[in-house]
Image 1 (cartoon, rainbow, N blue to C red):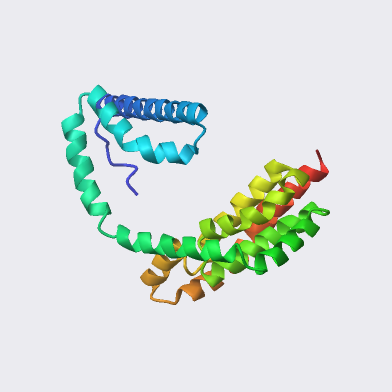
Image 2 (cartoon, rainbow, N blue to C red; image 1 turned 60 degrees about the vertical axis):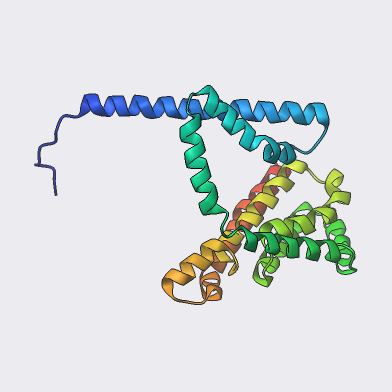
Length: 233
């Protein structure tokens, strides 16, 4: 439609913009590398969890880097404004995760997990069957209302006795694929909830629309690909 319209020659301006973006990206990459190395060294020296040091040193590291880059005042102004905006609704997440933690802790002592543990242990004899059970587990718990992280927290104690009996890389791929599939169909997922709100429909209806896609994703990517890795290694 607009092929005959002349374009202004902004080649020099565009080149400067590209160089500026490249410099900013390089600086961001340097920050991430330095922070990751810093946290990894602390984890190695003290033997604590990696995420523990990330949470503990993220804010001091950011202020230190802003001081090094001579942008401390600007960073403090923006960070404080964003902090006030983002912390208004954190009380809801606090009670949500507190309730989820209490639920997970109590459920871990119930007999239901013993039954599931027996099923998963039986599945170690046939890896594809084990991966199919993991996919079904995430599929069912997503419709009950479990967040993928909560489902994964409940699943890990069940898989701990059998991790040494199955290949770890295919198992990791299955866990990632099956937990991510809940983004498509779980009515309690934020993406499905937002889409349902925009369309003015029930979130379960959106989940029903995407069930076939989620099942195909888990079957083809999470199970079939891993099964091929096992049979052709």
